[in-house]
Length: 250
Image (cartoon, rainbow, N blue to C red; front, top):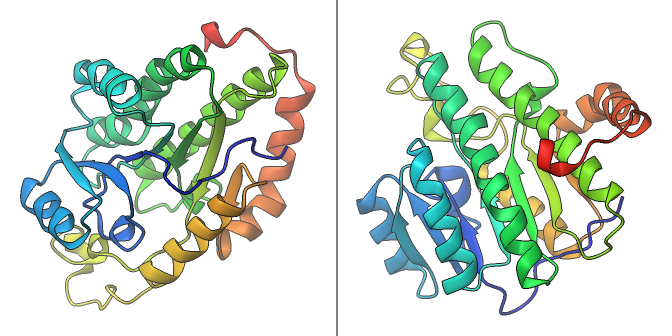
């Protein structure tokens, strides 16, 4: 299915978790949220059209208020949800699954009420398709998120409204970030992992060019393309073939 909504000049965008290095090179004309105020301030100083909002996505009770502020007060019509945690199972599922689900639950009726094309962009991972044994809960949380997105997108398609909110999945491969440093993954001590994977600027440039161009609701890169071809196509075929329940029951 072609995405009905692409990034346009002058559009108001909200990116959560934007202090993570993989998002910094893609920030432009947006509101951003993050848990590290100092990094938010640095990014806002570097990009004049960026406003930082200190927000912890693990605070699920605070998500409804942020969603209302973003859509009703700030005029946001494109939401990009990013959340990463590499510690314990509860934290990983809260940030990588429960928080995006709460955002989607709050945003769908808000976007429907403003009656304009809108998009929710959620970052999963190539590991949503092929888990890595050393990080089972992280991979499981990303797989759960991808499964949820497939189902919600199918429910929205079934409503038959050509202007419904687009659900877009970004599934990056291994990207060069600080998350591969020993500070975040102590078992990598002595192993040079910082430069493993795709450079952040290269990945972000590709992802944003494709968002602007439109026509994709699954944006893959590198190994993620191979995973989508071998696994994702079958997943989507199964979802599309099954009966659809109303999105309110998601």
